[in-house]
Image (tube, rainbow, N blue to C red; front, side):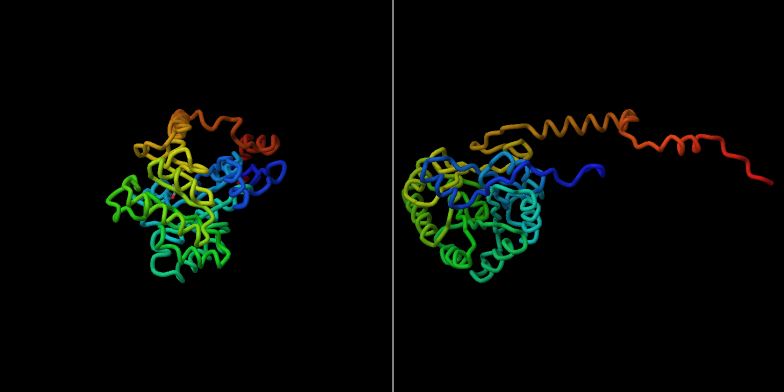
Amino acid sequence: MSITQPRRSEPASAPVPVTFQTLQEKKQTGRPISALTAYDYATARLVDEAGIDLILVGDSLAQVVLGYDNTLPVTVDEMLHHTRAVRRAVRRAIVAADMPWGSYHLGVNEGVANAIRFVKEAGAQAVKVEGGESRAELVERLTAAEIPVIGHLGLTPQSIHRMGGYKVQGKTPAAIGALLHDAHTLESAGAVLLVLEGMPREVAARITLEVGIPTIGIGAGPECDGQILVFHDLVNLSFTQPAKFVRQYGDAAALFRSAIDSYRRDVEARSFPSDAESYHLPKDVAARLEAPATPARP
Ligand code: KIV
């Protein structure tokens, strides 16, 4: 940021904030819900100003921002740090934070205590937890503590080792039955939203039809009440082969590469900065600087 630019240019008028009631109404009236991840001030601002309904500070930041191989290493403190940055940027969308692996697996009390940190210290309006029936008590306790909870079913990346990799879930009658049971259990426990990841569209469609709360799909087909993607996948900043369900809407990597290359070439050719990009002395001071120095008296 330049020292001559103000910190923040405010939009003309304050937008009407999205609430979970807004999302519920969207489901009831068949209007799709848009969601994206974001992890920092600049991208969260762009996502919010584009009118996306829900911004998830996903633990996918472990991979796309911090360079880890999977989501398991990211800590509560790292997630809080990024959630605060997103919170400072967002005026309209709901800001939800992902509870990282290990922050709710030791017991319900610890899970509630960590979720409270996301609300109190980072301004999150909701938390997301992965898993079905085994999270029911946690979802109930968080709901009782006034924290809206987003469930996450299907391909749950925090279960990578148990699943034996990132594999589409819910392909057998038994697995479909278990997913439906989990979806109903989370809804009964008080979850306000369900993320459905990596499952056949027919299964996501059935869950969407059966539960009263909105479903947000990622690799779960078009029948979900809304869709979410990882921001870095959307704009080609993930440095991995995109999954089948990713649609790339832009090529930020190409844009950044070209800008960085041009900058390096200009610096090496001394064509940056130009005179117009330089600060100048007032004329009288410049003249004194340029005048030959008076010889010192003996
Ligand atoms: O961490 C994440 O980004 C997620 C979304 C992809 C749903 O959990």
